[in-house]
Length: 153
Image 1 (tube, rainbow, N blue to C red):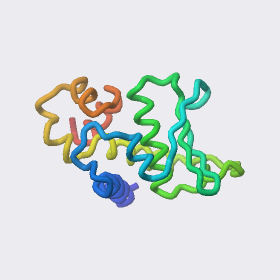
Image 2 (tube, rainbow, N blue to C red; image 1 turned 30 degrees about the vertical axis):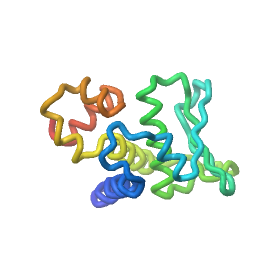
Image 3 (cartoon, rainbow, N blue to C red; image 1 turned 45 degrees about the vertical axis):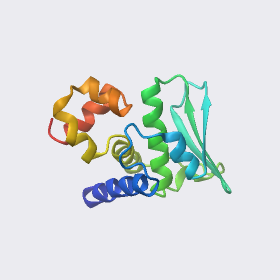
């Protein structure tokens, strides 16, 4: 994911900018999805965290209510990443294919940049601990820890 990692981060930043959310922390995923014509639906299912369904012009992100709030946010951003990055596997309800490991990594990188933009995070990361940063950005402490490790601490 050498140069692709940079491309993915740029795509996430461009999406935020295009929708006037580049300075919004935490970002409002509902508004962002709505502006892209994607409906967010909640399910009590426990066998999946979330998934993206596309059939014709209908786009739905299904997310499990069994997940904690912050994890649901990351899951929605992850599924949005599959959509924005043009991953084809689950684009049709008729498709039997699954996401590849690379597509999963790419969707995770997209979600991390979308929810915890590098510029915004680096500007305040030394003023707060990991838990505080997680609360500010609306993500789990684990997601924040992983993101901070990408910056070397």
